[in-house]
Image 1: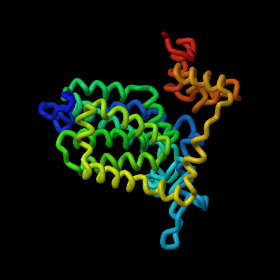
Image 2: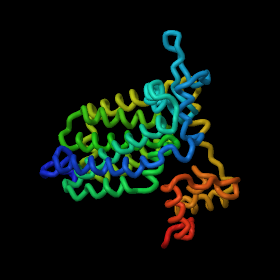
Image 3: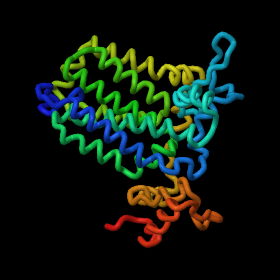
Image 4: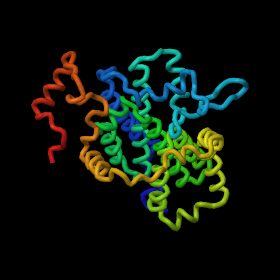
Length: 316
């Protein structure tokens, strides 16, 4: 077993200091994400899940159970997990920026909490809580906790829970942890098919983290069966949808396109330096009129940006 994953240290996810520290990291994200939560107005991708809440549904995205349509997918690669989670919320609180965004912030706070516990569980050091603190302060993580494009918030939660469950399985070899972790990964794949990239990353990184030989030895038949079964259960809606539509998720989203390489290269550069995010939520000045800041907080934020030269790149 990799020494960092040895369970023989006092520091761990059940330690009181660790739990309090993780909770404070989660609370910090909430404090940072809550101000003026209703602004800017909601964007199309942010409300994409509503197609799985309110009818009429696309016939290709539903199955019929007992005479009732049950939406499985919103798009060929986006599932309705978030839609099912939001159904009771929207039924009680109605549709508003707060009703849509506050649950995402709370889920992101949960992901920070679990990530902090995971970091301590792996390193056996309370100093690893700093990783949770850094995540809670990360501007992109905070902003997209508010504006759940994609969606991504549910994927973050499912991923960190899966990792925590896998570490617990590694430490005590109880199959229930393996089952829960595999279920989370299956649900993540259903929610968004591009979650597959994270699965590939895990397939590469987990043997390195645990040690290749030890990892392979741990893949006994019973464990493989449990992991496969619960992964399939989690991804079942996506599987049913693709069986019904001749693997449309993969046929329509995995085409090789060698055109416009220069433009894609520029976009990749913009992604690395961060300026690809400009215009993702707020209109660019050349797209049309830009609203003036409203209220003292927005005015102060705009003034700080102005004093900094309204930079579009980092200081490096």
